[in-house]
Image (cartoon, rainbow, N blue to C red; front, side, top):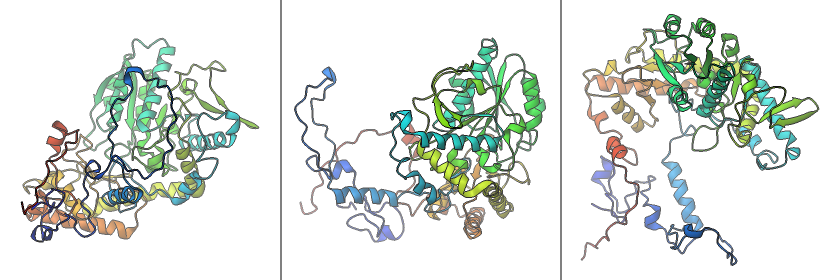
Length: 521
């Protein structure tokens, strides 16, 4: 049966299939047509003044036909975006267990401060003399980042974690070139337990990547690093805590052998939220490390918006930090834009200094929590992950044995053998239970990986319900109730999609549907 929009009126199974609706709506789950199907080109919710005559300067690129975008009255546009928001799962909806991504609560205090006049309305092209307060905020945040990491310098301009990786590795590349070894040190070592962006970053700027295997316990052996080192190695990119959710206990020994070989130690700081206030990376021998402000200091994560990935640098790399950067002259805070004091920076990573909203939010989080509060956040994140790990240990298999984890608990699919249920099936069934799935099939060193990170944001009651839900699903899979999984999700606005076909045969253009004839005809 088709609804009045020409679509199947029952996107799911169950009661909605037995009792289809004319609209396709299911109570508060609204079935909305595409904007191109409902909009009109002659309607707009915004009053725009007529443009005066002008001489176009686009030449052959000037548009000759109407743009053809659909228009809507204000109530229609508002309803559209509200309905979209109701189909989206976010951290304000419930526990968001994505491992390695740290989907944590963003305190509203941070949002309030970031929206204060003087922060929210400044522009990157303003004269420097008009924004001394903003520069002071950047400098203040930089001070705390250096204090928490035990590093002497920080580059604040990178816009995200991967951008920070690029910054740190470009500083390393510039330092190697300054030593006259740019043509010989071409290899970067990357353990199998590192973040996936690490090898991509190294390859992007011309390095060759050499993989380092992990031990049976999920950590890196310094002996394996030492075997791979030589005059051809520029650096190692190590994630610590690593992507298996484990702290690299031999990190100091690894740093020592890397430095003895004349190479640099890049630490992926994406998981700094597990150790902030507990361990200073500078004390571990780190030369460069990016910090994801959204993961450690509660700034918003994802959504296509601006981020921030500051990079702390050791004494050896500090002279190579990119422009611009803030110079604290006690009385006057200035911004350095050109070479001074014999520095040899690799240049400019981005046009402007950084993302002011993220800086303001992160500094607010630091000041409101203090050293003890940030330390407790790290401890609570680790406690929450281990609470989930032990709560599921008797039903789900851990790839590296029964050992404490850091901020995230990792399971594999060994326990699903012979059940007819896959990691993907299990994740889809979680959607029916009202949870966003955990990170699946990553890290790649674990088959059928399920990586769960609860963060410090969740209460014990929230964790207990999550554990009970996963236990119920696990027991259902072990009982052979495959139908609960194979067709899931059953209760989402859309059923399971053919993800392989969507990736290989994407439909990127909307085609108007054929007119629907009335049944009476």
